[in-house]
Length: 75
Image (cartoon, rainbow, N blue to C red; front, side, top):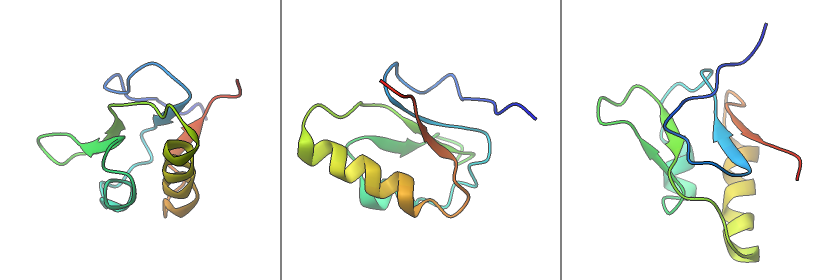
């Protein structure tokens, strides 16, 4: 089965796929990079990390996601 990556994700390394359950964990951890859609259907990446501190937050969100809906492209 192929994952569906939401169109709302901005271009870059991190993304949210359709496994997202809108639990808000990623937003709690890294609100500068993840947000929920207005209808609270799912999260998406609206800003990509630019430095080590940003990467740490995004990686923590990725590692903490209870349904592994956050992905990262290999650079």
